[in-house]
Image (cartoon, rainbow, N blue to C red; front, side):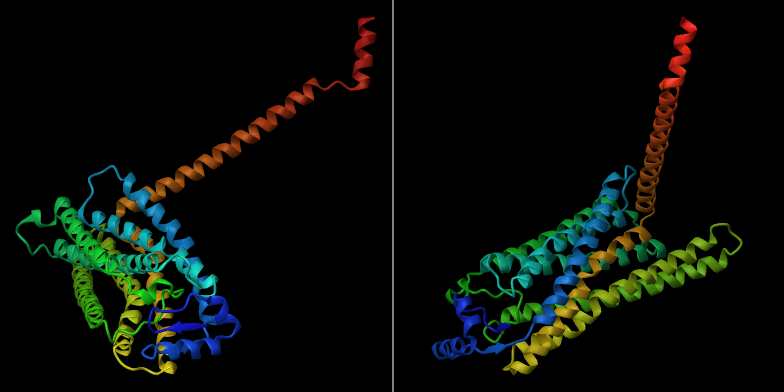
Length: 376
């Protein structure tokens, strides 16, 4: 499989597959400044197709149910529910980008929808991933402040305030999205058939710097997340010990355990990708050999799958953190089971009535003969 560090690539994909070595020689002689690396991505493409297909199905179902549950909550929504609702929206937008990645790898890493749409899908994917990360960090801070009760003004954590914060997060993300997508595409990139691939950033140091800043923001959010949830767990466990004789003392320990589950999900999905991200961005700024480019590119793609898998695990977090969501989902499940049981009972009653009616109305030849004799 061909992987180009620059986006430029000739529009003759058929010539490449028929004689790739000759095409590389001709193309490299015309553009001396572009490094072309030949990569074998068959196994990687298969892994990506299977993984993203599973994530798409599970994530779409889980987040759709969660979003429906949030919208069905008729009680007054609190600040955490507002954050979780926005996380569900961000996860769904990320999931809608996955079919395009799947289609790209099914077509043997050939992009046919234009470079503008490639840039749009790629930017939208990362935008929603980082929106989810920031919102999860805000949720941890919100929970810590509420449990700690260290503020005197309760208006800080109102629903309106959390809605305003979410609007600011979306506004900043959309501004960055427009700025990146609106950048003019180079002439040599218009006919490119490559997408979601390794690119050099030696001539795009500003873009590389933005990538560094985004990674640093993630680590700040991650350490705040650890600090918040560890303190939340300590406070809840301390309360559960003090109120051991109270009937609801066990709920504090359960909430503390759920806090660590959220932290484990966040760590499992996002930490490997962002730990490797520094290596990936640094390699883009240097003259890295094709051997290391292939290794770095494949590692980055595998770790990106783990980050995408977070959209499947977030519904578990909704269920653990929001009692109203738990009640709504359980009510929906109970209604469905009750409806199915009623349909089964009514169907069996209809069959029983039908069989009884047939038994009473059916006349055998012998009974017909006896009836005729009695009439005679």
